[in-house]
Amino acid sequence: MSVDDTSTAVRAHGWRTLAALHGLIETRLERALKAVDLSVVEYTVLDALRRQDGFHMRMQQLARAAALSPSATTRLVNRLEDRALLTRVLCADDRRGLYTELTHAGQALLDEATPLHAAALEDALAEAREVPELEELAVSVDRLEGARV
Image 1 (cartoon, rainbow, N blue to C red):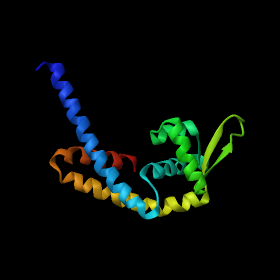
Image 2 (image 1 turned 180 degrees about the vertical axis):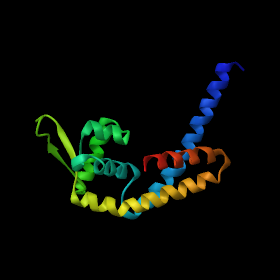
Image 3 (image 1 turned 45 degrees about the vertical axis):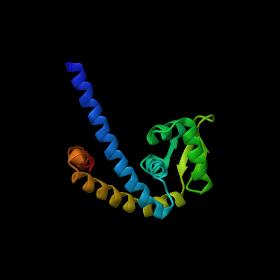
Image 4 (image 1 turned 90 degrees about the vertical axis):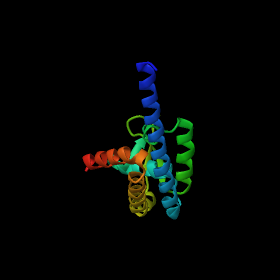
């Protein structure tokens, strides 16, 4: 095996480990968020809006924040808008642009969902710390989380 083959194998193993941790976390989050009728990606969009000044973002920004294609973002925004959790408004400085804004109902649902999300995330990371293959990565996530506080 050459050096390149070894580094490729190491990266592939790292990627599989990351994917396994992601799957564990996402499963736990989906289960928890069902209690408030949200999916993980819906929560991610609402949370991204909450973190913005004025609780609004352009659709392109929202697509990047949720790691979705533009068409998937539009479909998701339509569903959340139908539920009155967000709304779209014209940009004051660019009449062609649209902002997506968090509504009061969206903020209230997010306030209800956030403790569920936090608890599910902590439970998933605690479980991952008990799995030898995931332990190092789970501990790294804890360190990253602490750095943001």
